[in-house]
Length: 145
Image 1 (spheres, rainbow, N blue to C red):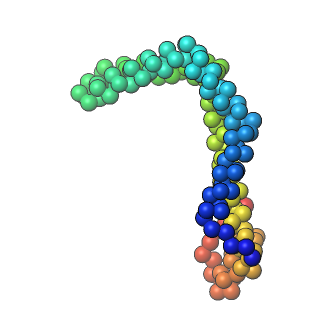
Image 2 (tube, rainbow, N blue to C red):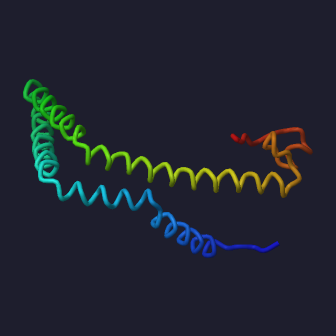
């Protein structure tokens, strides 16, 4: 059996990262992100929201609850306006798609490592028990499929 070290794994991880960077999901994310920065209305709304957030922090610090409440309502209204812009919706969806892809990779790695451990110890893949756990009649491990 070939033994790998952490450096080997990091090297392969970088290869996978480069593959992910070349996916349609990441390409769409880059295009959507560029459109966000080019959109004047989006930039204006973000700038207004940031300004109001600074005010809100000050109002909260000085205990001005009524002013804070009004500022938070303005922020919510601007955020709703921002979220209604199609390019923003596309950008947020592209973030979700890239995160889903990364999560899928992480889950696949995790599940495969667990399965390899179970199989290599003569365990039961269906129960997720390693060979040692089966031999001793105790399971110290749960595994979701």
